[in-house]
Image 1 (cartoon, rainbow over the protein chains, first blue to last red):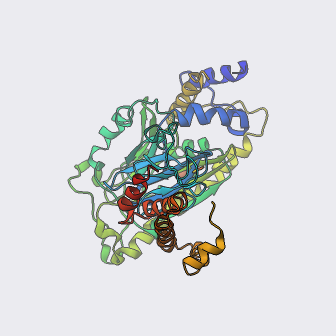
Image 2 (image 1 turned 135 degrees about the horizontal axis):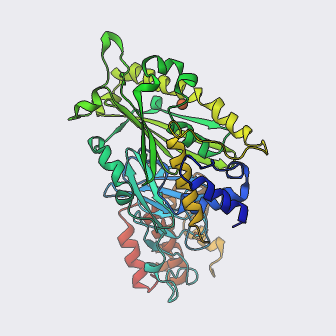
Length: 385
Length: 83
Ligand code: FES
Ligand SMILES: [Fe+2]
């Protein structure tokens, strides 16, 4: 690693009073972006999609994350698995479009077939026309590469290099904190799903999400019932940070009827809601009546696609009688998230200013951002490759 | 393959044409059935290689489609030492 980059990482990892934020190159430099892919994404548990994208047994949904071709597969036992979407023969992409697989996954090139568990089932003509076996082709050594995957609050997390601690170990603090939400969530359907394309490095979206410092200025509407002093910071060394509010008010429809709440919540959640970034790239929000998840997909060093999905506590909330309420709720969040776009894009452009040193943190208001920078810096410093 | 197209066609009532149509239409179930017909036909004539070639294609499609004939097709190929 370049010496100055190492120094910059060390500066970002210092205690908040003396730290400097990650420098410009972490937001605009392609080489750093490449290093991040390995050090910050592939070696960690990152969000790549949603369990609802492959809802039924046999569903196979391809996706590309940071260039990595992945395939979400719902197997016959209803378990969601993730494979590398690359044939073991000549490396063809196996599944091009989301589809339901009646039997096996057949490679479109030479028709090698794989079961939904990834095992190689047939290698047609591999020993010459009409000969489907060869001594050197051992089916049981040529299954698809399976990627470790976990589902949490509807999000598919994967650890691509296979070396991270177990998800439930790494995120035990969070799972504990939100144990009351460890139950099925029901996606609200088409009207509860939207994407935002933003011209900023993915980290700026995380940083802006974690902090409440900007609320009075950027979200005055939200702030009218959610004042700065009603917010608290949440920090964890195990890889998440964010904020909570003490004055959450659910969206209500006609006759003041709202969504059904999650069952058996403690009193705390009557008026609290919490918003956490799971490092590196998943932003979650929990409320007594709904949750949401944002997967940040870095599409280049300076662009990010935000996949936003809203979930509810009960299947009945997906019913048409709740259409209007769900739409209102999605609209509210979309407005809020859109209000943030000009700041994250502005910060991105600000990082073309060559004199910017990464920025000075407020030891009181910027803890979450600093916590994230420390996490990124530590991962980058420990990346030995 | 050693069998000339003209002979295959005449024996199987334009099977080549039907296969082509099924392929163009992306109708894998039809392809599977036609490959099987062709395979069994050639096996009856004693064209083992040709028959196994077609049966292989039928088998692979039955696997991909999860068709009930999969086991049976596999066994036919196994009988000729082809899997
Ligand atoms: S590349 Fe997949 S079968 Fe050849
Ligand atoms: Fe915001």
